[in-house]
Amino acid sequence: MKKKIIISLISIILCVSVLICITAFAGDGYSDLPELANAENIVSSELESIVDSKESSKAQKAADQNTNTAWKSSKKTDYIILTFKEVQSFNTIVLREKGWNVKKFTLFYYDEELGNEHWEKFYEQDSINDYRYCSFDTVTAKQIKLEITESDSIFKIREIEVYNCPEKEYDSFRVSDYVVTPQLANGELFDPESSNYITPEYCDVVNQIHIIASAKWNNEGELVIPDGLTGDELKNCVSQIRDFYGEKDVEIFATVFFNACDPDIVLTKKKDAVIKNTVDFLLEYGFDGVSYDWEYPTKEQWVTFSEHIVNLKKALLKYDLKVSCAVCPWNFYMEKDAIEAIDQIEIMAYDLFDENGNHSSFASGAVQPVQYFLAKGFKPEQINLGLPFYARPDDGGGIWINYDNPEYTPSDRFQNYSNGFWFSGTQMTMDKVAYAIENDLGGMMIFTATEDVDYSNDLSLLKSIKETVNARTTLGDKELSEVGSNEK
Image (cartoon, rainbow, N blue to C red; front, side, top):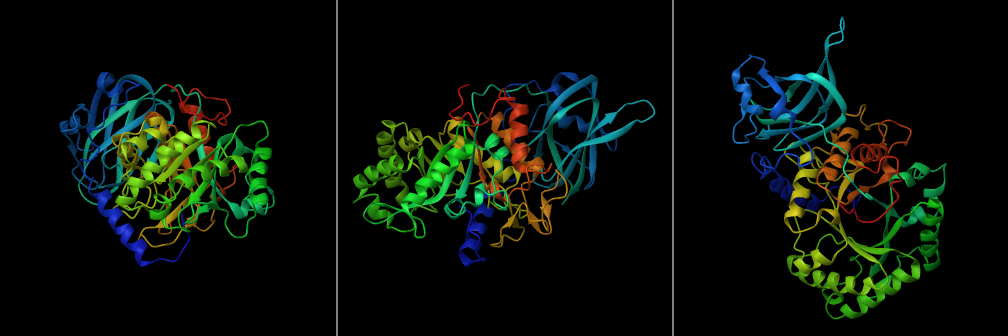
């Protein structure tokens, strides 16, 4: 997945290509997404008044439930105050911008405590873009203020929507993580003294593990275990994970690479051998499925790859084994029958630089990829939305900084930008998880949890996932380790 390498010409070209793709949506790409289906927009029935800093009546355009109209600010920083007919409780606000001009915004509620009346901040984030889903603990107030504190020009707000979303019914919610074979084989992941130790709390959140480089195909269609690792060691890695989880359920996938073979040979001349060898490999080493990480097939190779996925799934059904694939929203040509056959996909919703140099903003790292793959024909429950536990520089350079790097870790839950690098911080992670739940997705994918700060830290991204799932679904205090697809 993520390769910690020095910047190269190839990475620059890819970053530029993705930037062009992402910014092409600016202004109108997803501004017309429907209102939330499971909750009423409080603004539509309970709004008493809405004013801007000039007390202009034009502010009404931001609360008329019409995304074709917009309130236009009079300056680069401005605010809107919404007053309800009476006190309301809410936990979600959706903002829609016309254009991509807002760079930072804050939400306040008015605390009317006698003698201590003041505007209390409860939320802050970066860009709004076409569609911004803001999740937070329930707020109870009669007035809300949206303040734009930074923009690159006069901006326009299409709509402000306020909701009190109920918990969604989920039987389970996948949280996938990637681990590497060396860290498993040498015991780092199970050593409390190691920086890569996965704590017991990890097992309460992550319920699906993909072991990176479990094997590679060769040109004979054989799955070859990488150098430096024996078959017994790989089998022991799988066994160690299950022992560490104890009675908690966990699915373990073998992540297979394509970099030791000619895929055009493997997927055609050796296609039958590949199917048999894959099934045998999963059964021999105790895996629950295979996950593919091919970066990246050509358009023509997607055809034969799709055929392979369909045939492999047929063979796996007998053993109740699964197949998944890491995908990105800029090089995807999977055939329809493969989309229907595959169990799940992991969206690599990162390294997708936007106009600010953010590689995983809410637009590029949630809205755009989720809507893209839903439009491609995937069922929501097939999708795992990817979360980066690392930062990339705002110039698109080939540098990766772990979230737990003390020189770069954000200082508070609302911060995503640190010393020239963009993270998907604590609040951003919560928003992406809440948005996935709002869209009935099957779960989230992490890359990777060993890069998180300690779970006891309030800024822990892993903890933010669990807290959001508990708050936004009926899983509540149930163990997230109940794996499987979510039946609505």
